Each structure stands twice: as C-alpha cells, then as structure tokens.
Length: 110
Image (cartoon, rainbow, N blue to C red; front, side, top):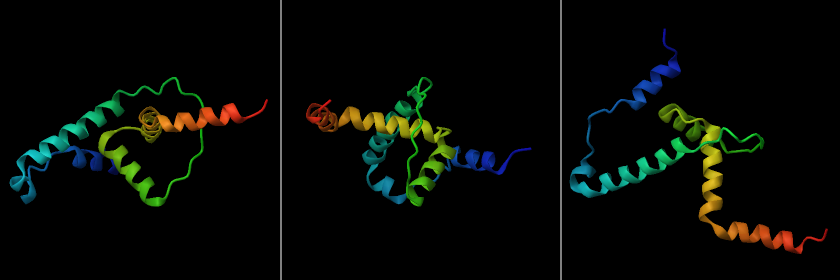
C-alpha cells in the first residue's frame, strides 16, 4: 500500500508529454535551461554530507519551506543536503564573504 507522499512523488517524476506553446516558439531556450537544471541537480545529488555532524537551527519563510519540501518530494533530495549544498556553494562562489570573515578575525583582539 503506497502512502500519499509516494503517490505524489511518482506523479511529479512522470513526464506529462505536454509541450508548452512557448517551447515551440523558442526551441533552443528550453534545452539550455534543462541542461543547467540537470547540472545543478546532479551537483546536489553528488554532494556528500555524511561527514557533517554540526547542526544549525535556521528559520525560513513559509514559501521557502514549501518550495524546499516540494523539491524534496520531486527529487528525493533531503532538505538538509539541499541547504548544506547551497551554503557551501554560496561560500565557494562569493569570495567576498570569506574576505569579510578574514577581516573580522584580523580585527578581533585575542
């Protein structure tokens, strides 16, 4: 017997076979977007957070929580993995954040 969540996951994963009108007008746009989406999804799926032991309590607005939970149902990616990947990706792609931390450490007296 399948739970309601399992049924929803199956429905979200199944391709509908319907094409939008905008896809026919701009055939190259969707293929490029799909490729980028797949690359980021692959990176999230390949992200290993098994060694992470520290917990941080964070607060999100309702819309973000709903989106993260829908993402979990659609991809089977745990919200903890998604948030961990997102924070790591943010620090990796925005070096000014690390510079801010370094400046703070240098200015702090022991």
